[in-house]
Length: 377
Image (cartoon, rainbow, N blue to C red; front, side):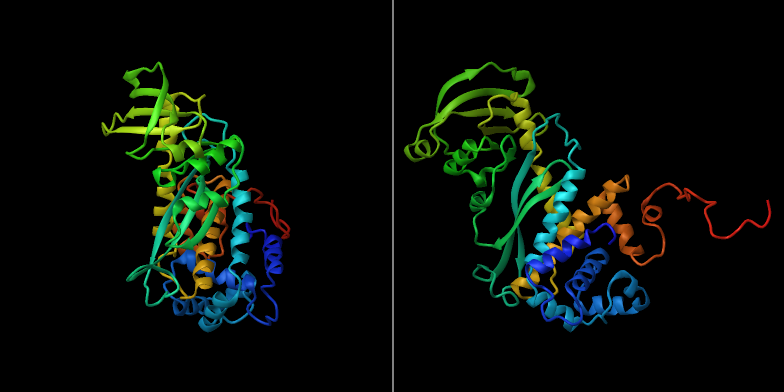
């Protein structure tokens, strides 16, 4: 918890008056309890209460000054504004992105590359009646803009399951020079033209009924897998009205699966193979969704209200980014999964974090520094 900027957390609390009329169990204590649940895979509020009370002598020094009660924690999750933890997650994201700014993601590009996608979190409709998705099914969607340098989520939006993926483009402020990679579910030429006017680039795939007019073709090396590289304009009336400029269409044959893929972009400078590799890197956001669903508690929830659900998801994102920050600052090898597994069994151990997470034997850098005088030479 020392890696968390506590002053920034208290600023988020003050912004939404989270501790207004709170005498015991502050927002910081709520965050610590929920962080403990994420790190140690607790299954219920009763589980959290039992485990934390068993380590009562260690809680005070950690920052939990009140007695942990499942009713108090459930009430805090229900009534305290989830935007506190959403804003704090953005604070941690800014720190992590700065740490991973110079990392490589497989392509030698100086531009910032984002992968945009959404995942559905299924809910029981009888427990979450506010999250109607289908006739007998509830769900929320986790829309994520993932920075591929370090796999750090840049923007996360939690919506009801009925919200279409493409509407999230209206909430983004496009970064000039950045590249946004997304699948064909985000195909909307009016929004793409807004992105183009903001000097941002997109890489996506067109639908099968895509109608266009070829202006000219550029020379390609078909041995590399690139079948054609065309400069086109839209042919249908409404798409052409929404996007009047030129586009680039690339056909590519995947040498591993022998599938033929078509890419659409407004970037005319990159080689066609780079465009294909950019779209291949979009799967990193799919792996991110798979990782957080497997290793964090965002499929089973401790409360049934919308605020409690969003609070748990935002704190889970905070823990993911926090582990990434610890990995970078301590220069640790290995995956985030390994670090999370070690933390889950050593969260209350009185050992150095570097010693617990390092493969090599930990050695004190200053073994002779002590208040005790030397008796014998």
